[in-house]
Length: 607
Image 1: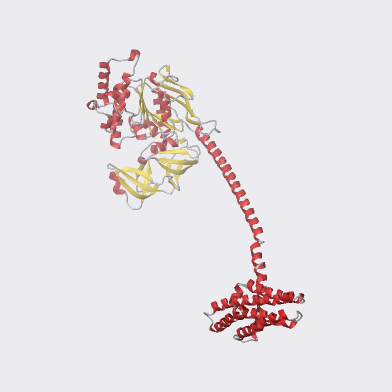
Image 2: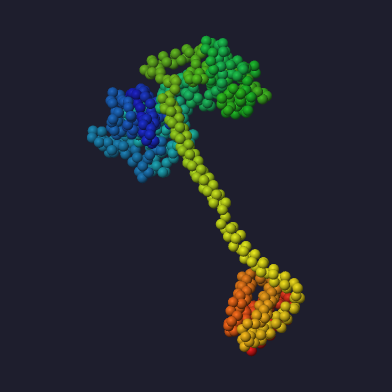
């Protein structure tokens, strides 16, 4: 069955709502697949090969273009009505069914005229199982089979309904190296025996080149080149195809063409005829090196890899674009490698030149004739030589989108920086306001203003009595207080009976109160600093008693009561002084007799 794809395009909508163009997975794909041939869709991941396969199968609808099976337009036909067999990458076998049941499943779903009898279905299933060499495992379940056997079951299930087109989506990627080699040979054998048109999708160029009749090299949804595997390898249309095909990969150097000579670095390596002077990429296949002690290309030897019949010389060059240069030579010539440097001559048909700006192929000499021969052979077989040179549409779209994304990111970064700048400005204003308010310390004023007056008053009141005390010995004040208190009481009692106007009797009481205060101040020198308010209050009360006695001299009772008040104040002060002295007696032995005398002075007051 011939398959024709006309201007097939698939555009997936973008997740970004601002982008109206979307992502173009397949772009204007036009190809004719001959009847009974195996075509390999080859390319890196994301090139659109699997999307093309799913559009052919009907699992995905194309955005534009048409698909023909023979003369039938199947663009809008459902998958089950297209007559295709599809083998997935992950086998997709039913785990609860046996191998026979998995193979019979597509036949059991046939309807109408295509429906087969039970006997016919069993015969066809057995025939296909023998074809893929799994007829011995018909009663086993998929979990009891190896990976290669499960892949064969998947292929048998796809072949059992005799499809018009067989589609294989990377069927060998889950297998190990040896099993992959065995299975791809089996696929090729089955395809040749059935003569079913087969489309094989892979990213492994070795697989595609080994089993395909034709290969289609894709990049970003565009066909880069079509042709027979060996023809595409020998005559790549552009730098991408040359780099993608080949193992080991092609060696690339920076070079130039001047006066019909090819230069790599400063070394003239070969003649290129009538090629225009230009900067070029020089691609040399690993098998294009000839070991020669007088060769024109010099490299520094890094190592030698022995691969059996061949030897891979690993070397470096200042003009090399690749990290290392790999040269495959015969094992017989390995003995000719001596020293740290190696010199090569080059095979002209294995040296490929590409324009540095467009990456298009620049052919010279015999390469021009070889290209003309390849094109003529393809036309004779009914194939058209397809190649793509120049920039790709998706590359331009991706470049524009990348620029838009960069601008959007710059805008977002600018907004974020603006927000941070505003926050920093606000923070600076807050710090400045805090600094201004911190210049007026209310707490410090309270500390300097409030305690200061009290301390000054305490000092002024303490200084005066201290000067008086300095004239009297330490033990004398207690005795004087004791001897003077008794006459004060007697004089007060006499003043009650005597006439009211006797100012002489008032002076001793005032003097005694002052001395008592002085005594107290002397005895409690350490405690006065802590409690200045008590001394101040006592002095104030004593000072108040004097003017009141002077204001009311007429009444005897009043005059007598004031000294009595003074006496009681003095007595109270004496008690406090006694308590203070008792506490201080632990550290001062001279204060103990004063405390005793003060306690005896209270007895006349009780009488």
